[in-house]
Amino acid sequence: MKEIKILIVENEVGYIETAFEYMNDLYYDNRLDFKIIAKSQDLPSNQNLENYDIIFLDISLAKSSELDGIGILRKINSDNILIKKLVILTGNHNIQEKLKENGLGVYPIVTKPIDFNDLLKVIG
Image 1 (cartoon, one colour):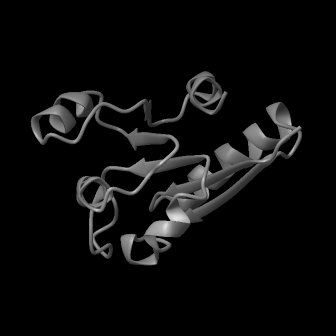
Image 2 (image 1 turned 120 degrees about the vertical axis):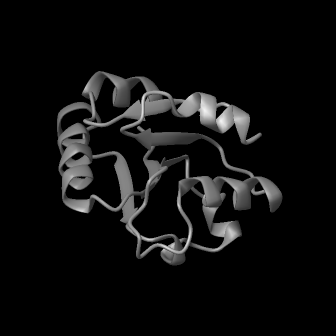
């Protein structure tokens, strides 16, 4: 089976790492190759973003982050970065409307606290 390369941009590292380790062990036979970064300034270069099968992006990053999730989405869109699949991580159940209002498109959403069934659906 093919490895699934995932980038997670999320400031709640411990929580998200536990969730993905659990999913990896229980459902994916350790085929999830995931990397977690907590701040936007640690994002890989544009070309390297294109190497990930899925990018999970927290909309509300820590204050120590230069860009929040909306800023990162704007950068991805303005730089025409080819993302295979982008999933929004958020505690805000109404985020889809905000994304549409800002002209940022429609993306799958996983709300926090994370429901493992939601992760299964978006990872496949």
